[in-house]
Length: 571
Image (cartoon, rainbow, N blue to C red; front, top):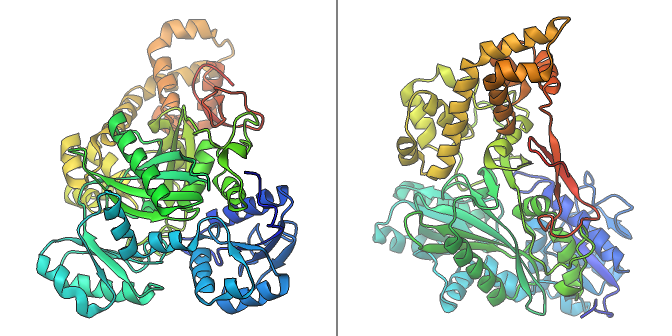
């Protein structure tokens, strides 16, 4: 069905201030939605309390209100502008919560305004912990043992179960705000009190903590015609217990078998259909690494932080498509903006690896608790794309801009073996470097896996990078010799160098293919970064560029973007 002709003016609710757990990804979603709606001839009215965003640029919408995001101000704007509908699922948790309060205040009925896209019933079922749990049981999807708490006096039942540890999940909050993991009664009472205070509904869910289970996310899209697709699936490097915003995330999943992938995909599509969500949606699931058991953790009935990552990772503009679905369009009517040949009902295909690493503010707040749990602490993130996990990881590490260019943390060699083990066991912002330092000290994959519960596949990849680092240190002198030869007036040809130094040249090629920086390799060779780069280029070891086109090169892309890698075919 083409866009609803009765919708001529839309009020878009923004995400408000940039805070921990809600950063610029929602500005990106709102700006994309404004463009998407105006493409269809819709007049856009925007309310957002944050003037330091792209979406509040006067050219983004027809009317821009930089006002407090409150029921009172939304009613004033609705009374003045008389929009036909409100879009709330593109403004993060702030937009979603505000739309719920506006609906409950009777403003929609009073001014004959519709909530567009995902209906209020679906928002309530996804956000209210008790309603969501009951729905999952109705449709036969497994959820962990849990208790719904609205008052501290109700803690007797979970305490009587004697199940430890327990995880506390407040309703209607973002970034795990107010939640946490409790290992005893004192911790449970403290976290529950905080969660109840911070929940808009004064409600928390207490459930069994799935120690060591994998955390997997699916970005799902559905329209009013019940056409649903999975845009992207993502896997957390860290097991359950670390907020996905604080975890290293890999897309697509690397350690799932096809059976596991299809099982979780089917569950995600079943969930979005049962909720009746219209637009983008994020489904979080937990998978037992030793069986095919899984649990549904939660659903975000809106464009989320993960949606922004999935959009950039796949080239599929989730916010743009969600905005068009909100005004009545179906997936098979929305053009893919990248290929301009396929439609939005085509599931993206990835022939590369995308990796996200969070950026924490601990360099500014040196006295802060560096442990990471279910309550998000990251203030940003970096994303990298390459052909495989290892080079994507190395790119992302350099992009963090924390003065680290590889697998060695500055303080790593000053820690004792016991401190390294503790840093591996307790999730923290430096766990990645603690793991690689553990491998340097001879720890085995099985030992690190038992301490961290990180999947052995990831650990073997890190071990391989540490082994390559060792080989580079060993071959550093030969690389330095090559650099010196190139400095002479009569430098031999590349063919001659290949014959005489073939082994070390192959090592250099492998290091670049696996993502090692020129700076790191130059340190091992005892030469300057500039001289090492000159040698690399002389040998013809240069990056080529591959395309992000949403369809793994099955269709020609009209507006693709590219990533560099050390491969053969340049696109």
